Amino acid sequence: MAPEPPLLSMSGITKSFPGVRALDGVDLDVQAGEVHCLLGQNGAGKSTLIKVLAGAHQPDTGRLRWRGEEVTLRSPIAAMRLGIATIYQELDLVEHLSVAENVHLGHEPTAAGFVVRGKAARQSTAALLRRLGHPEIDPVRLVGELSAAQQQIVSMARALSHDVRLIVMDEPSAALDPDEVDNLFRIVGDLTAEGVAVVYISHRLEEIRRIGDRVTVLKDGRAVAVGLPAKSTPTREVVALMTGRNVEYVFPERPVSGPGGPPVLEVKGLAREGEFEPLDLVLHPGEIVGLAGLVGSGRSEILETVYGARKPTTGQVVVDGKALKPGSVRAAVRAGIGLAPEERKAQALLMLESVTRNVSVSSMSRFSRAGWIDRGAELGAARAATRELSLRPDNPSVPIRTLSGGNQQKAVLARWLLRGCRVLLLDEPTRGVDVGARAELYAVVRRLADEGLAVLLVSSEVPEVLGLADRVLVLREGRVVHTAPARELDEHRVLDLVMEGSPAS
Image (cartoon, rainbow, N blue to C red):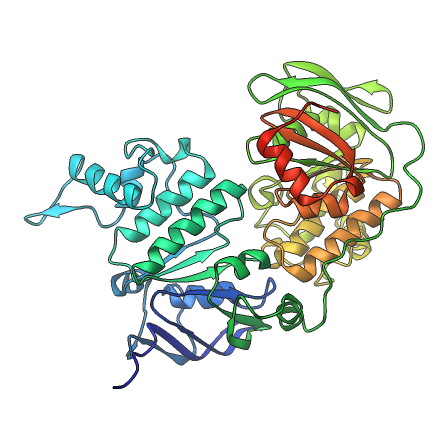
């Protein structure tokens, strides 16, 4: 008896854009009921490949087979009708519509040829949410009122509202805390047990080993490995395939001597009611301090309050001995504080502008005279700042949207270097950044600190906080429960603290 063909088979897929060959003869096969992980650095071709699979891009050459039969996916609707759903990292939900309206958007329930609104859609949505283990999500609630994890569940419910046989998940754990990741993996396990296949994309290699069955690795638009066993392939081998070189998971060495000089930043009794309790913090030039805690522990809210984007209920922020006006971003920036936010595309970058404008935007007074901008001076300053951080490509005139995640983050850092920033607030600095670029960003941050910059770091990845910071404050439910040098902590100790809490020390 002949073996069952793969659920999906892609062979020899090529796709070119002006000046770029994004895919160069890629092969991929996915079996029913498996989790097939797709790995590669930013720019390796992952996004293009899944857009071909989703019907959003048409391949130049190559063939797609679905259950052994050759198919052409001319549109996302065609892919969905076939049974292929894609959940992108940046969820395409409509915030002002309800959960039920989002789940059935574009294919509302019908009866006798008429669209059925209201009760039928709510009942269908409630059944899907129960299937996903989240009956607490109200189908009539507006999507914009939900947490990131809940919105992701809604996207999964929308995928399952079709007769889906394959789900593509692009960085699904990027905005989730450990408990939410565990729930995501439970859902994936339930789906694959029902025979649904999952193509899973993540930069977190520990997740791949935990959830994946097989791995395909892309590099420079080519599949350099197809169908490797996810659990037994050594991490070093996977990283070498992705980068073309061996990359060790090591952080830059900390300086032997501690930071010197008077404090550059002092946070005194800073608090926001309902978000975080009074906080005291001292940050010296050349020091990296990390805030560790679960999503919702107040980490990002602390950074945004120090930056002036949120007004504190009590307390003050002091830079070089001078108290800043509460809730004033202008005062913070003038004092030398810069923020690289978690959602850099939405909160930090001008996606339709050039790298130059993104780097210079906080320093425009340097290039403006009598209402005119000295474009040459602006370009020269941006080029110098980006070269200092080894941003690629070495052409600040290109649109920022064409850069990889790691290089976009470097552009944000270059903005604050150009501004003469003395305190840098980093919120999830390597979110959506590949392995090789992470190592480069760690080296950049450590070098900037060694040159005297003070850094306050937030990351959901405990190893990142412990590896990069000199000192760590552990947060739980808006309160500091432990403070210690990073070298005195390990991942298990931090996780115990954020889950259970302990007296502050």
